[in-house]
Image (tube, rainbow, N blue to C red):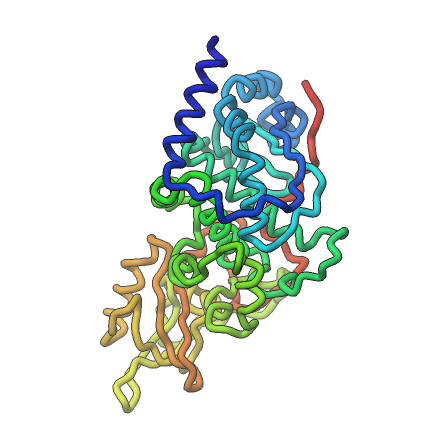
Length: 389
């Protein structure tokens, strides 16, 4: 009886949140993989936190997962195939994998992983603190977001024979400001059709997603209302149409760690304070424009793409008159994902996002450059786990 009540409750919840959904625009004719929610993840959980489970029962934690993932399991049972179909048609990419599992664990270091596809049920454990996972509504978007990443990764499957033109596109490089933004765009457009526009917007604007989506500023500036996805023009087509040296590609270029064998001495840059986040100075030129005169290549301004002789026109849409007002404008937005600097470089108008770089997997030293396709910034290589406990 309890299970019957749960299913009825979930069906009512799904129908209520999907009042504004639209399924009729999709053909549902493409292949979709068999995807199973797998909570037999004891060895996987232990491999993620070997120190934690020296003195703690991993079996107890997986039993907790089994007792607390019923809403997610029932939701996937009801909506899983629909989500997979819509992801296919909104992305313009076909599923290559015949099957894979969604691994439910109690703890994970981040909000989840796409390959293997891992969803934390209990908390985000970074070995310092444990942060509670979001409620069920937000968890649904989290699942669709990880599936969107998995969908985009299909273009790299060895069985893929269509030779997608997007495979080597700069925007497909796995960084928070490129690949993650593409995945979020695909996830939101899929969620609009499954959860409804209003519900999806509420989830996306929640505190959880504001804190856990570092590419938000760039996403809203360049993708959210500019790339409109549909089965007639899916994401793959938008990517293929974007020139590799476009303004968007330039603005989303990722910071990169300096090579560890780089022994060049870090020199003090005259006229730039030894302390300070941004590391550059500006002066007025003869036309009373703010020009970058000195810049420290080991600080935030350089890492985000600013260069000496750049002419700064606006900061976050506002004209700045001097260095003080410029720094104040940057500081006002740095904790909200960053500020957009409108600059002119060699007579070309560009946008530079001065954004925080305090992301866990990046070190303190950066320079602004491209990196090899083989570079990875994601903990997405955990071994699949199908064992019980």
